Length: 221
Image 1 (cartoon, helix red, strand yellow):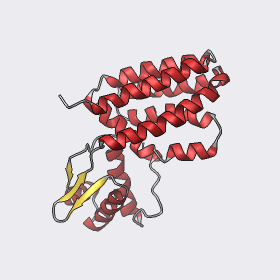
Image 2 (tube, helix red, strand yellow):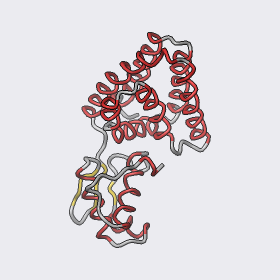
Image 3 (tube, one colour):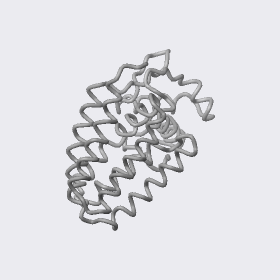
């Protein structure tokens, strides 16, 4: 999973800082550090066998990425996904993904084969208790966007990566049965592309995204 975490230039220098950054960010994105949890700089440094300094630097970088809020002498609070953030990400994803799926659906089996492979990865993660599901989910959607071969759109889509994964992690934490539903909906999208049916593929992608994000808007039980 860490292969998908590309530290920006501002990531703390040195192996300890880079390791601290990757360790915390991976857990922020896959939901193991959920929104509202207070992270201890000392505890995490001990877990990694490093000093507090690189962990503190990693926290500062993750605060700059709007994933943490720092509280001196208390730790770092994991910033929850806000309603407005979820709505903004949904709007961006709808614009990019519906446009791309309409254009790439005529590729038919040449594309659907890659999508079914991504679905197989999601099914493996489901059998493993959900480990890695957020990455596998994003890989399915990115495959559609990348198939359009527009590098500008791909870069714009990749800029949503962290938010995409955090929102997916939040969704499945609220309702773990959602993973199986996501997989079933992904399969329907892949089958529409296999049939070279762009209008049905667009309808399915839009329904899939809107249905997922509606769960964010529901009050917690």
